[in-house]
Amino acid sequence: MLKFILVACLLVQIAVAAPLDQAEAEEKAELERIQNESAQYSYGSNIEDNINDGAIQREETRDGTKVKGMYSYRDGYVMRTVYYEADENGYRVVKEDTQEIGDGPQFDENGEATVEGSLIPKYSIRLDKSDNEKHYKDSRTN
Image (cartoon, rainbow, N blue to C red; front, side, top):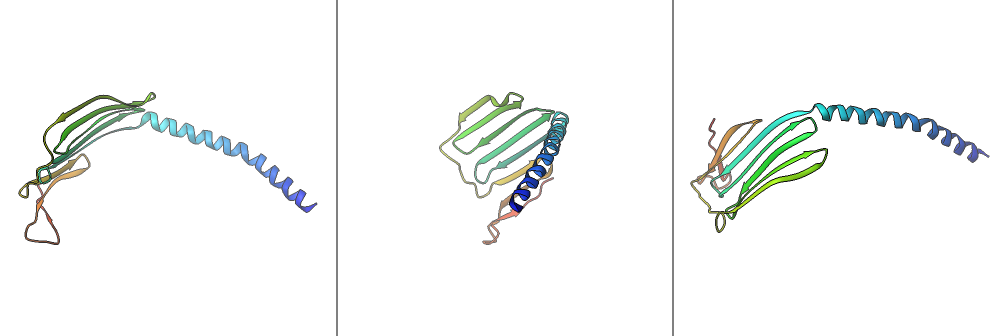
């Protein structure tokens, strides 16, 4: 009999809690919809690695639920650039360019690698031939 009462109490508790959970979930979904519709950002980053003969670039802009952007890389074999959009219709590539550029990356021990982005200051590094532990030294360029 005690088991029956415990099970009955548990079922009543679940039945009472379910509408609250549903209302809470709907409220959370509505808040997320509002945040998505008003979201805005724009950023970019660029890495030019003239030590290892590579490059990576990315740009993206969001206005509400619409995102547009591009990314590009160079690896010594190809230069590839992809333009994309994402919105209520999902993510899709709208243009893609691929160009063969060589037989592989060409290492340059005297080269410099530079990093810059919308959220970080520009900086560069070079190989540090004087320190076998460190390998690279910061050669800040602002």
